[in-house]
Image (cartoon, rainbow, N blue to C red; front, top):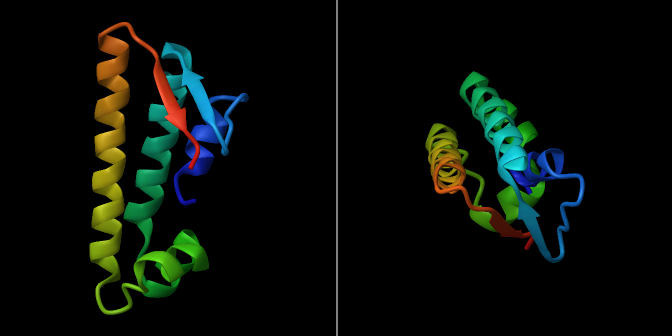
Length: 102
């Protein structure tokens, strides 16, 4: 998955096949990893760059975005922003976040 590595990097106990508890410390790391991924997406300058970053699994699942790969990047960046809002809200509310791998 395109964003799974952000979650894996944020919590050494990340379980791709089950639930994982993310504490404030994990969420802080996650926000940083999501920022890095968003920066990577914004640096893409061609469809071939987009394809290299998202991978064949993404293309097979969601379409190739060949005609409008920039729209694909925009959608991924929106998802990242939504995840960051969720993480920040969880931190602000002094709670933990349970994440399901699949």
